[in-house]
Amino acid sequence: MTDTRGQQPSYETYSGPLPGERAGAQQPGGPYHPPQAYGAPAPGAQAGGTLGGQTGAGAVRRPRTGARTTPRTRKARLRVAKADPWSVMKVSFLLSIALGICTVVAAAVLWMVMDAMGVFSTVGGTISEATGSNESNGFDLQSFLSLPRVLMFTSVIAVIDVVLMTALATLGAFIYNLSAGFVGGVELTLAEDE
Image (cartoon, rainbow, N blue to C red; front, side, top):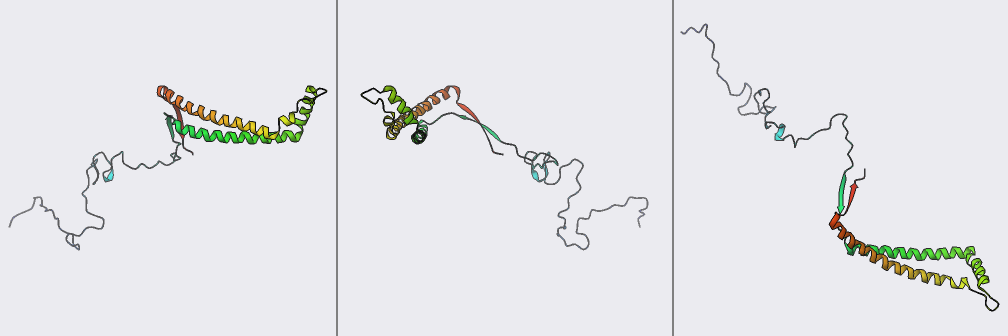
């Protein structure tokens, strides 16, 4: 019989299941992880990163309490480098036709208003008295400025206006393209609606 008094007892490490457990059964809280040393990364984390293997750049940042959460208006600075002469010609042609129609309609409405106010009869009588003589009655303003003549004259002006505006807009597109090659074009700043 050996005397064991005064000696430290020796303990063996037990790695089997605890009493009441099946061998190989997993604990309800997941596998057991030994305690980590202070400052060591948690399981599944890389050194210098966050949990789940995400680095600091890919981590989801949550706004602090009281922080401003309203989105800012985004702005973009763009430059018109080139204007297509064909598209400019088509748009200017349609706009000049619309302007010509508006001119004809405005001239007709203006003539009707002036005729209803008696402007042509008053001014025509004064001119006929000033230019008349014993043999003739003078210049007849009402027959010269009749509605068909006024509309025909306005239509001719509208057609000339369509041709000139289309040609000048197309020429302006060519000139803009040449100048944009030297100075870079017109810069625009676009912003989103809030």
